[in-house]
Image (cartoon, rainbow, N blue to C red; front, side, top):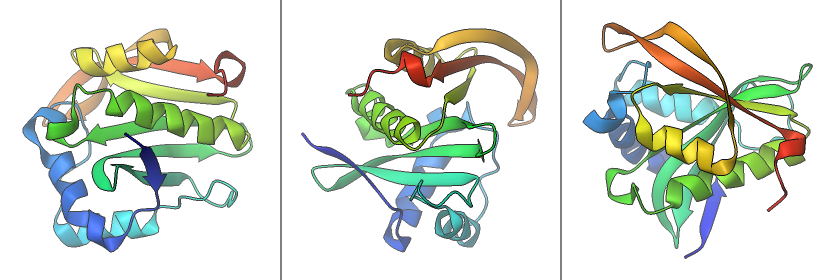
Length: 171
């Protein structure tokens, strides 16, 4: 099994939209579903080369043996303060197999090797799978953000997790 992070291409739009609108995933996301054209535009505007420090959003598609299994991003990148937020979504058939952990670990490698010093994750308090994922990678829970985001019409609590560059061993 070889996991690779690749630049998103137009061929990924339909799969990405399916992953993002899957009912299990939607329970924890606060972005509207949107139409396919909106999703294509979002995917097209995301950068994937962290050497280009002009962006605030960098996104990759995770492939295992050539099959797209998920998407991962570094967003709200602040190149002055050197921090950002990691986000991810998995194809339903790929969940629970370790691919998400591998995908996020590869993204941490990319972020920290590019000069980022702090990577945060905002996780719904009732999302045990994501909590286990970030904790297994060594993220530290820093706090509770009460009624942090509106998800499907309801304000939801989130945990703030973070990883510092010096806490991440290069893998």
